[in-house]
Length: 308
Image 1 (tube, one colour):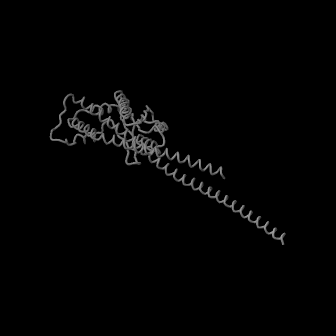
Image 2: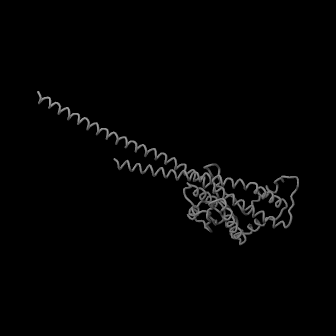
Image 3: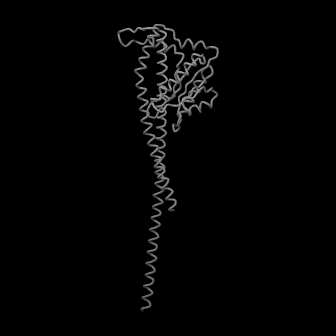
């Protein structure tokens, strides 16, 4: 029985150590979510500025360089897709959700899909499909590492665009909704959506001073579109990272609850065994006392008989 109690005590200690690790991961995930949420929020003003600049260009009917080049590739439609996932595990269904969503959307589009994966886990899921994997990027481990990743992706987009390798470029990522919730979403990066361009062209200017483009208009448009692509990719990556940590937080909360239940069960078994052990020891003490008392009484009785 002592071996069983020792085994339970060891299991309780191990579960307690595991719970400490889980709660540390919960704290880190919560902290990371706040970091990426602030990054997304900080982009809003800059994105608004880029939108206003593009609205002036579209209002003046400047040719959309990116759209016109991509639309020439009508012979064989090839869709470039950038899918944001994770490199690490313990994120629940995070990678499965975005991979399944991307496959569903891409399957409904005409043409062949070529995938750029951000994250080894989601890349493994995309490799299980019949879609062509064109590259793999490492998921940033901090907000400072997002910009270098976005720059790499922009180089890939520019190269594919200039060589006419793709007709469209889509991004797929999990959009962070709340502390532990997210949902898959997508965005058409190129060609620029006609309705979206029209809405920007009709966007009211915030002041009474009407804007004016100084310098080469095509160069200005090209620069603004690059900034638009940068902001869109940065936001997608930050949202994906926030969602990854939200999924990890949900998984850790579930694990913490399971460990609590397991500890309660183990401690219940341990205390029952301990009580049973104490009861048996007490029973042995009482039995020994009764046996000793009976022996003394018997000896006293015999002594009285002999005396009489």
